[in-house]
Length: 271
Ligand SMILES: NC(=O)c1ccc[n+]([C@@H]2O[C@H](COP(=O)([O-])OP(=O)(O)OC[C@H]3O[C@@H](n4cnc5c(N)ncnc54)[C@H](O)[C@@H]3O)[C@@H](O)[C@H]2O)c1
Image (cartoon, rainbow, N blue to C red; front, side):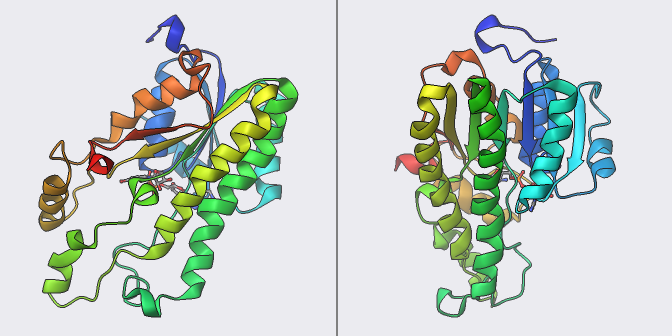
């Protein structure tokens, strides 16, 4: 067990949305390793998500199938968590979607013909879903007089995607452009965070944004080389390199921090 009083999260009840995914899974693992009680809210099948944690001691892990766009779904899982463990002390909103790189050409094509239906679908999960989880779980935290919420943004929410990274795809005949909605949705997270930080500041609920840079996931070589050239530190992030920020923001080490944005991007937004 890893323990440092300043960064302690032991026995804290933390909800991790998107905990069935890559970064959410890392956050949940980092918390479990430090003695937190972790409730994963993910759209994927709960037993499948649970199985993905077979490398962990899962006594303090609960997995719920939750659609973050549905208030009933969030509240029902929250009632379960409260019934067993009490009011959560932390919430990480990591559930999000993007147009996958192999989406239909119009979804990853020029902005002028980008479909409105894709905009609605992505905004619903990334923005409305984050807002609804904050509403239900933040309300319970405010009533308890304490809590820490982390909303996950992206460098693409601070600055535009660099479309030149995808030149190699256009060079081979695709019409690929990194689509608009992911960026727009992630920008919205920044001010949702500031709004809620000031709204709940006197009730002991801190709300911050964590902004990761791109995470290595065996992307194509051309992409990786372009990304490395574009990044001051010369590489993508490893999956576990956001964990320090998460533990910091959830623990008392960040007790005077609210409404802020912690950027962990290898310097991407520094030039
Ligand atoms: N991976 C990166 O390079 C990167 C970079 C910057 C920011 N981020 C952000 O980090 C967060 C996690 O990203 P990731 O790479 O782990 O993504 P991921 O796709 O691996 O995981 C996302 C998870 O969200 C879940 N989800 C999707 N829709 C949902 C819904 N309606 N309700 C509940 N759960 C739902 C999925 O089932 C999945 O388990 C996201 O907010 C993402 O925008 C990721």
